[in-house]
Length: 88
Image (cartoon, rainbow, N blue to C red; front, side):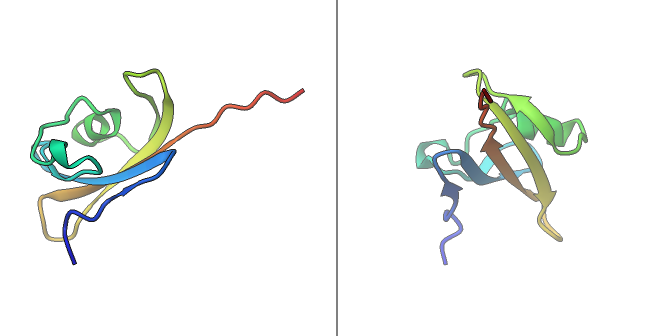
């Protein structure tokens, strides 16, 4: 199995970063190895904040969280877009 297997749906994504914020695995291969500490869920990881709602630079609202991979310096990051619907 390839370690670069990650998920990116229409409204969600899962990727792996190390303890410095560098992508170990990312839906868009061109970003593997890049430092993405500006991603709101990665920033929450470094601030030791729990899962919560965030706003991406694009203005999209997401909910996300992270979990350390046992016995490593890697973290699985998961984020999904929050859909807002108007009830009439």
